[in-house]
View 1 (cartoon, helix red, strand yellow):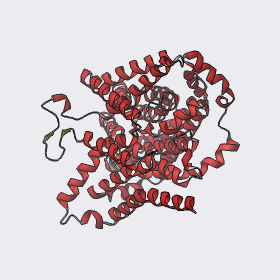
View 2: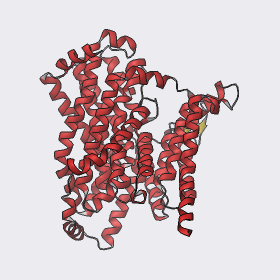
View 3: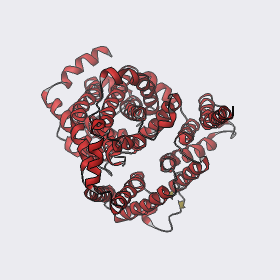
View 4: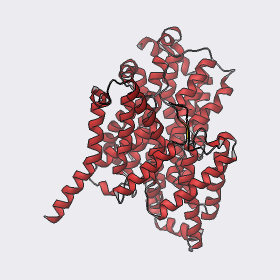
Length: 504
């Protein structure tokens, strides 16, 4: 293995491949930063352009697009409170609050550095421990997939700023929305009302754009109507200029970031190698753990930099680890790697154990590409953060109009369907009502993302089990079940202890 790693490095560092990685990474950052455009869409659009390329060059382009787009989602999440990609939902919790306090550049620099750390750790895992991690992932059956989904849903307790009942209500609302469409097990149409556009349900990105971007547009316009003009916004930024100049420094940030980097990288790598889990779950779980470990958990959601460190590290730690089951066993870890399987097949490469034997130059070259594009992303993102942060000084009316246009164009480009645009607007109204009623959006989003996986895997587990009790008794299932209970009852237990302490 080490011989192949060394020999493939020289082939990866040829000039054409370096140019391909730089261009594709920059393009990926732009794709991720635009609401409505996802990493999967970017890679899918890129594949036709790789037909005439050398297979390794084409795969390196996909790696750059993949890494760049996952990080790029944090830019919109921090600056305008809209997750550019589903995995950046968690980054909005603290990123935009930091930007509003005048710490936008610091938040952007933190995001790109943490993204690089998580992505590099994931790439190293892909290089050196892929066979062992893949073997563990293969032990996950339907019951384990169900419990990992429930574990993700149980993290809503950490994101609630008010009533737990409200959070659970929103989570179940998200689960209900996820049931719209064709039942994946029986093929029955559910809640489609004979509408052909609802047969495949609501695309996740349509729901995300609607719940996050449209309410933000209305909120900005309300601020303008209330007298908060562009001049007032600029005056506010001038008053906090000393904060805006705050930078990421090695001396102050490295030591405090190291525990979070380690913990979140491990979470992201493990979650990434589980097919179907994805970066959203990794970011949510990592954020929850960071809040649980923090000495100031009440600061989370109000502009806590530790929240960005946790979410962005775990978010990007999923990228390369999701390729572990794909390259080793031909099982895609997420949607992007599923699309990359198509890219491999186009170039005559069949993922699986034999690929390491027949084409070691390409396999290990791709591993190097996943590592190197993270550092290209670091350079582009770090030096570009100064210009990204200038978006905060854009007049509010223009910024609101730009968000609305980008959201509409991005939504329409998914399927070239006006129905998606109308759906996005409907979810926008729902999101606005939720904001006014102070209902948390994050649990609903998590329910929409995890609902199909949880439902499908639970039904599969019950179909193949001799008894329903088996979904609890399998070793990995039992372990995940215990983690779920801990996740659900720990906040309650902690609140009671705090109440007793207050009375004392």
